[in-house]
Length: 468
Image 1 (cartoon, rainbow, N blue to C red):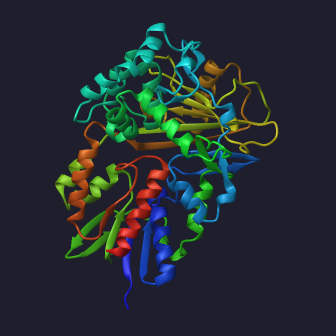
Image 2 (image 1 turned 180 degrees about the vertical axis):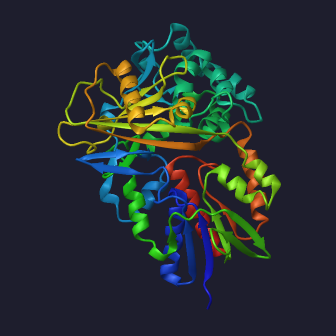
Image 3 (image 1 turned 30 degrees about the vertical axis):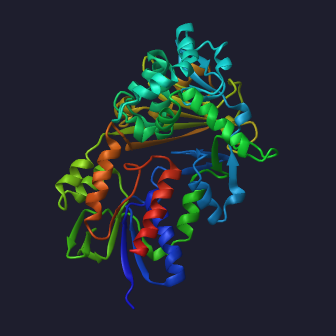
């Protein structure tokens, strides 16, 4: 019996997860021949961990949101459950930079929505007018429910309707920019914050919706169960996940330094051009960034290429490792609103967010440069970027010693922008995709940008492929 040939284009977390899922099937059935094409010299994409001198330095995502179960499920199937670690939520504080100073966000915030209005009373972050807007939002529930638009809208419009411009400017925009690197005036609320859209439909008030959800969880929870942490990661960093996935792939499946330059469909067979003669496959999983996928699919469908034409923001991350401890405010880190005179988008105190990230007496900071700043500095040397990060962190945190070492990564066009209408465009794209036999589209351009979302999508697609 001839084996079914599958090409996976792109070896980021989406492509590697899909390959691992197919490997499980092949181990049981022996009916697949898979080639994973990766243009760079390593697998994992933005998921990369540097281990040095007792420091665990994540160069991309450092974990995932715990309430999304798909990453944890995969970790358990890989036998890595003993490496799971929870964020230090007892020490969790997030700061907003205001006038060059760190000002703590009120306790109990879920994004920009408070679960406890009393926690706002002593907040120095918000004016009395903003606190009043929060306090009045529950009473406006019927009006908010009636006036909810039937069509998609921007995050900015959504947050303004509920809480006003100050909350958007001081909390909503920094938070969402920190995650998506985008403009809240353009980002789709239905694509980026679907849970809050659903809360508005059901409760009108987001505050009442969060309180109802918290009560439901409390009613269902085991009274003795520990409350799950907000974030989860792995001892040894998120790169440990890629390392285990890679270790379970047949080595002859993986081709590094092999960019795919063309795709063509001949009847129901796919021709993949990656140097030399085109190779034939029965199915292709395209797991590359949107702008790369767009050019590969353009000869097949001009409309698919048009739907894949989306903005994507770049990021530069600089991690600074210090071999001696110094005082810092308690908490996970800070966000920088656009109005502040800083080139940083955010900063993380890694050793306070997760345990086991530094050797005894060490400190680890990560500095994030947002889209405009990233483009402006990406041509600088690693040393120049690390020096800039240290200078910017010093402005906000106070005097810092020289780091023992640094790690700098540039992630160009790594965060696709889910602008208003994104869900409808992706639905059309998926309908067109289904008209081409044996084609799947994976990655962060479609249905979520977090590790759990990418893992979920890749596993679902791989199962669909083998069942087709």
